[in-house]
Amino acid sequence: MAYANIFVTFIFFAFLTIPTPLTAGNGDHSYVEHACSVTRYRDLCIRSLASFSSTAKNSPSRWARAGVSVTLGETKIVTRYLITLKKHNGMKGKFGVALSDCMECFDNAIDELHKSLGVLRKLSRTTFVTQMGDLNTWLSAALTDGNTCLDGFEEDRKGNQLKSLKNRVLRATHFTSNALALANKLAATGLESFPDP
Image (cartoon, rainbow, N blue to C red):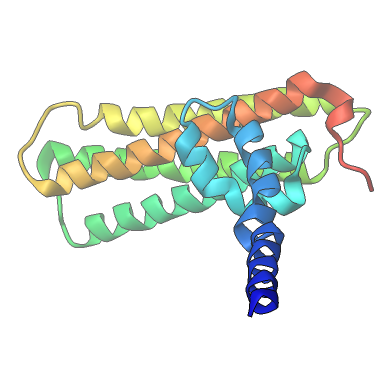
């Protein structure tokens, strides 16, 4: 009986020392936490980019690409929402005009984010500085587009519709801000940030 108790105790402690999937993933999670430490909206960054940890690891270029990629996806979601709102005549008068302007801003942002992603897919040691300048210009423009959209709805209006629009647009600008921060980190890191072939 004593031997049985010893055996059970041994098995119990053996299981305690076996890494669980959660423990094994802590290393990956530290990558995204480190990458997102430079961003303004850190929690959003960690939540939206956590799935890239195992591939991006310590590579600023991969994190910047991931940041732009998820921002592009979020911006497209907001654009589809704005289109739906417009189709259903959700806003009229001056707010209808502001909505049309906002849609144009987001169309521009999508174009700028596509250009940014294109740069990050073809990074070159010889043109790195120029590429980083272009990247900063386009991401900054995309961020301005989002803020310009919000400016059109500065005047308060009762109703959940406008509140929902503002929240969605604001969330998209937070994504863009994070992507810009990750791009700036890549630019500051320099050539050492390029992943191994």
